Image (spheres, one colour):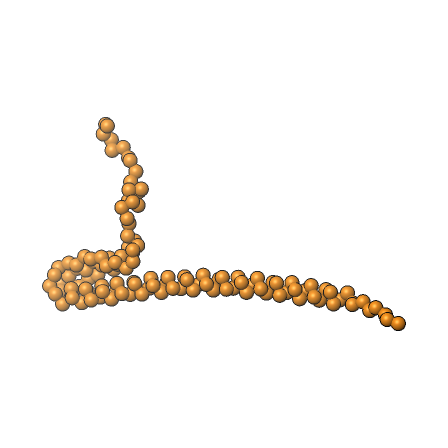
Length: 127
């Protein structure tokens, strides 16, 4: 009297869809975590760069105020921001007023990069 009942086909399909859904959501979660870590690292680098710039800018403002209070004719200086950038300022006093000729971030070129940029060009004279 025992009758064997088979499970309907729809239960197997629902189980397969559930497994695929969980697998897909797991992959998206892993990608989201990876993206969030990359964004965090980039944000930290950006925060360090901005902090270094504003520290150099603050130093430049202090130099500006000292130059404005003094009686020097010209001030040209470079303030390091990082290993690869400097803040270059050029101040001139004309007719009692201080004019800013340059206040810009400039990349630092190392000696190796300068050697690579030099091309042996013939200068028109014999060897």
